[in-house]
Image 1: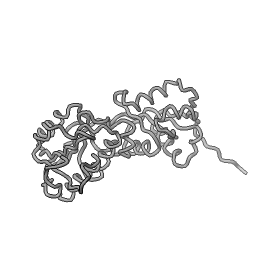
Image 2: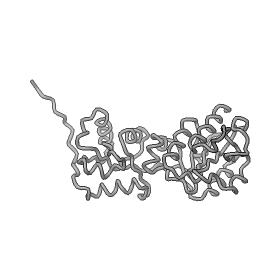
Image 3: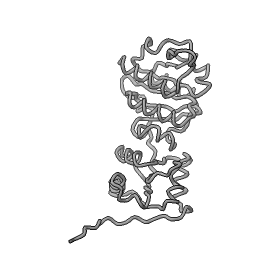
Image 4: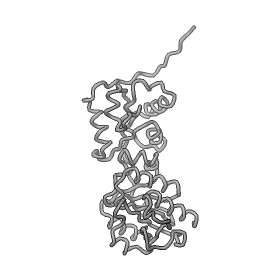
Length: 271
């Protein structure tokens, strides 16, 4: 009997948590490394390859190379010339920010989109998330924006980094495809939307028109406020329209991602 053995060269193995690759992964996970992001888990690494995100490094658990889901991902990365290394369990615990370490992570180059892409098309629909500090919420906003046909998302003010590892997991890969921008000054983001010819719709917890009664056609920027304080009064006053999602008492507000989803899908319905 002839035993077929793989002709693939085995990648080098990292066994020390002091290896420079570990430090790079941790830096990318924190969002401290300019221009790169950490892709944690097989789903995100696979989505990044499908979106043609350039990967700089892949780290895979030593016992996962023959995994039927992970092996094809590693093979594609290797064919594209990506540096692939294996790692011991203790090293995977260090490079993966998850409580239960993922079996594969990658460092990828952060996608960069200019304003023209975010506000692309004849009738752009852009979500401006203002001071949304929970990275899971920011990721979910990006995900529903892509799902509902929005042209882009701006993470403005004190919003969490949409390319941080938690937000990326929350977006389930949408942040790798949908044009996403960051502006640390919310008023600048709103001014940009105005310069792009968009009407401004501010979501407020009370006192606005119902989302099903407002015209959401044409170039539009939807302002969604963060947890707690919501949108600053000055930005609300500067908006063309104020929208409130009808809610039964005693509920006073909705999750930011839920609010974004309702507005995006109502705009989709109207369009």
